[in-house]
Length: 293
Image 1 (tube, rainbow, N blue to C red):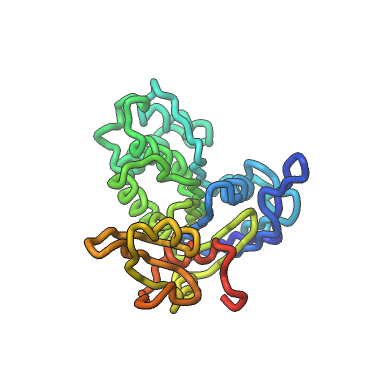
Image 2 (image 1 turned 120 degrees about the vertical axis):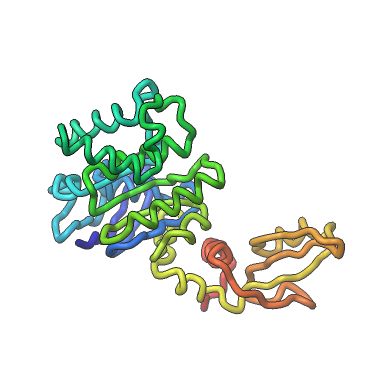
């Protein structure tokens, strides 16, 4: 079943638009939603999760408008919001049992499902520990478990790796990739490496507007021939940051090796590099792109 977003916009007080004219079509796989903080990612996630309604446009799940018939989606929806909270005095089993009952899953079915999910998210050994004593990454895994209680066809996770240490982030990204299968997983993040590790398709939003939709290879093609490396004196670094879009710097005994994303070589001696998704993302967000980019 596909999810179709048609010219969706959300207006807040003061005639401020969180997102404008967003159109997407999503099929099974991991869709990575990229954008800087404040771009409108969470606004779009809340609309897709039926938490808030769009001001304009429509969202359809299997041909049914979720604004007029939200339960059609909610019964197959799993959602991990950015501000997911837990009851600190409950353990994982108690917390998930409570949520399962609230969703109409009870008795033997709930116990079996909770056991399966705790094993899936690698929390079996911590099942009886109070949630308040768990690390940030372990709490996020409890969050994923609660989102999967009803075996959803659509799984939405909003900034799930924020605040996690590198090891937890890698583990969490791998888990999301494994969960895709025949379901749609929407992963919202401003961290390119999170998207790069798991996404089969990518959407980039800037200031509430859609800037890109496609597969990672298409995004990489936007910066072919536009990524350069050059070594400059340390004293020139501040000027270089003002003149160019820099995606990386490495200090060497010869000076600072800078990675530059620009239409033209940044100076004599610059050599062309193979682009990365980080390069493409930065290039897409800058306002200094050429008209034919």
